[in-house]
Amino acid sequence: MERSMDMFGRLPEGLTLGISHVQYKKGFSGWNRTAIAPSFHRFYFIAEGRGSVVLNGALYEPKPNQMMIMPAGTNQMALTDQDDPYTRYFCHFDAKVGEWPLFPADSRLYLCDASNPGFIEQTFKELVDLFHRGGPFSLLRAQACLLTMLACCLEDGGYTDIWNDFMGQTERSKLGDVLAYIHKHLHEPMEIERLADIVHLHPNYFIPYFKKIMGVTPMQYVKRKRMDEAKRLLSYTDVPISDIADQIGMQLAYFSRLFKSYTGLSPSAYRTCTR
Image 1 (cartoon, rainbow, N blue to C red):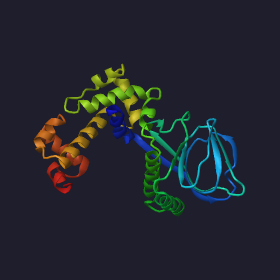
Image 2 (tube, helix red, strand yellow):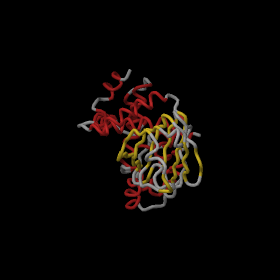
Image 3 (cartoon, rainbow, N blue to C red):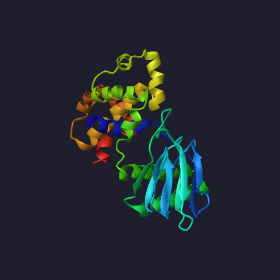
Image 4 (tube, rainbow, N blue to C red):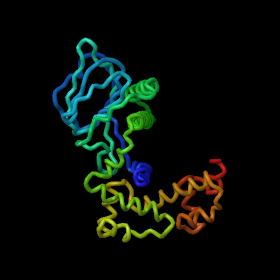
């Protein structure tokens, strides 16, 4: 369990998100379709109606006030009742961690009851409006809406194993031991050679390999993790700042400079404003 929760806390750092289409639709048109395997993920909120989907050969019957994620590349069929067709909000999107799709094509349908359907519907309405209205900050706000709803879907559905599923795919599973080592040894000097040795790669190959999967270089990741740990200790403990620097393996002066470059505040100012 410790390993699972540790992965959950650290994996999404390399997450990138792109939205290609958002719409609200009511009625029969556009839902019934034969087997396809789209290149994008689909996220739905069902407001009304009856119907079914078949994903990778498995039959599901989404109901009102349910959310679902249909991963890209999965074989999909969809049907809806002609007398009581689905009313639905939907979004087409891409999601990757590094170069890897967050939801692989051999995965399931992520289907759940919304614990707060009113909130989801209102958030989806905002997403539709942002996508079609545009504006200088619409993309950021739209991504925030989608990420919030995706998190709700995965949480409400109990899909807490998604990160383990992600790390279990092919080469990505190798990196789990590297991330666990970094987390366990933040207080020690960290050398590329040692990290590369864990996955039996030459350092020159390990650095682009790590960046491809995580979206940052190994040393950038280590620094970020040390800053995250420092922020936690500053906010929730009374440990002296000099001791915090020691606990994350840094000289005090260097720690203070690096912390300010990451947060815009000195460690003492950060502690003050987060209490």
